[in-house]
Length: 459
Image 1 (cartoon, rainbow, N blue to C red):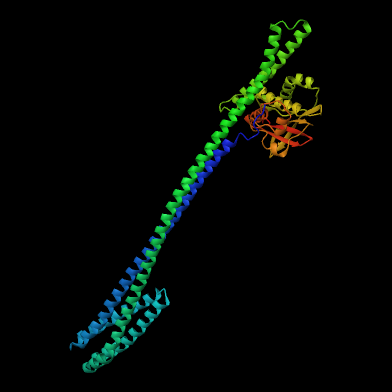
Image 2: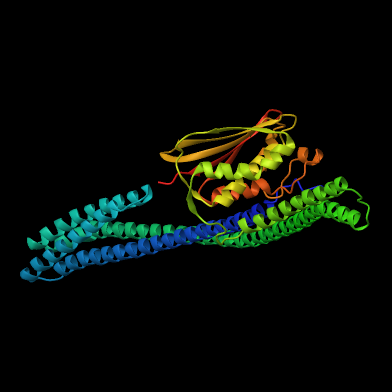
């Protein structure tokens, strides 16, 4: 018999790796989507800034132009009329308009974001103040009825200063236009880069998704092949295990049938062979059926409140003949007044039987094993631990991590031709977990092993 020493849970890990790969694909796609959404949001924000800035700038410049023209227009009206009341009225209108212009210039200075904008605003403020100084002198002359002097002053000084104000306003317009053009160019470049990013993201997503799907399919295919190989090896192993007792029983039966057994002693010997091999055959079938039962989702046990001593005594009673035939003595150390546990007596007894049978198999030259039971408390939870110790060959670190996997057998067990299906410890572990417990193992190669069944106490 050459049972597999490879891990039979690789197909489970393969499915997990498939899930991990698909999750990675999903996370990458989400990351790409978030980057694209961020770029689109930034582009929208930048366009909105350009729009708000352009609209605000155009609105401010339009109001300044209107109020500047209103200031100038009211002054000209005052110069071209001889009615004193109208002159006072036009002078007031001019002063009201220049107040709005002054406030608009200050608002522009407050909102200036660059040194160039501040310089242009300060130049407009200075030239506008110079024009207002001349305008005030002109209005003063008009109100003093010195119209000729007012006209001369306006033509000689007012018109040139007003032209400077217009030039400053045109300069601010050009500044806004240039800044808007620069922002539009920046947005165009940003859009171009975003387009490149989207294209690259789509190509990367397509390639990554293709590779991921290929990897998932490859993993699943390898998992399926490994599972198929494992099943074939298991069938071969069980077939070999079945063939040995069947052959022995058949041979003994043929000897009796063919009259080769002549006396009572030989007859008893053949009967012993048949009984022994039939027992091996029954044990093997029971192991396979129990393994199949423990792998089902539906309950396969009858839960009751049990005494630990009943579980231990039941297991020991079932292995008494094995212990006697092997010449092994067993030491017991059962603590008194142990808490009750909850479980199925036959299942927990079978769990301990598997541990005891393993201890006998791997006891080596030692002719002694021990079983102990004591209470334990971990994390404010009370329970019972039942330990089976042998002093035999022990288990290497490389094998210790896999001993509870179905069908797993160590290379030493295979090389030593120790019989088994690799199901005993797997069944024992599932049995412990079915009742809220666990099964642990500690081993030193060459010094023996300790397997401990941990069960929670009944509250």
